Image (cartoon, rainbow, N blue to C red):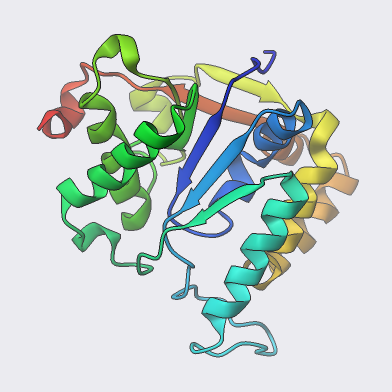
Length: 233
């Protein structure tokens, strides 16, 4: 499927590196065309597990390291509008739902994007991912249907295919693959071991790895799905 030309793309994820794995090829395609991309990263991922092996970071130094990595990844992808929203890692599930939705609503009102990319509520595993996804859907529900931008969502829970079905959108990002790898390499504090294994499998032309890395998958939101009826509030 061809990636459509957009007027402005807004990407909303909670952690540095969330963008790299699932959507960096899509982002790189948009920036390559000159489309403005705003990346609102809600935290600095300061509670990330990986401190290096041997350790090169401490719990105190990790926020600055991950901030620098995020800036490097944004530069690699051609993102000129990087917003670090200043929330605390691993606490988003405890933030007030209304305030979280307000944060997204403010971005929508300011930027008026034609496309928003985020996580799918109920299918994104991590509590911070889920809190972000809920906030995005709640902010969209505040808008009249005719004024909502397109919403492309990443889902990767084990039950995704069974409950959501196959992705609605699949992009072959092979032509910007090196930019995607650059984004993942930028987040080296968190990706070093994963990258070593991934690069080994790609060199072997492992089909499952090729499919996972060189194709990016999105679902469109099922607005009338009873599983997420609480998001109508």
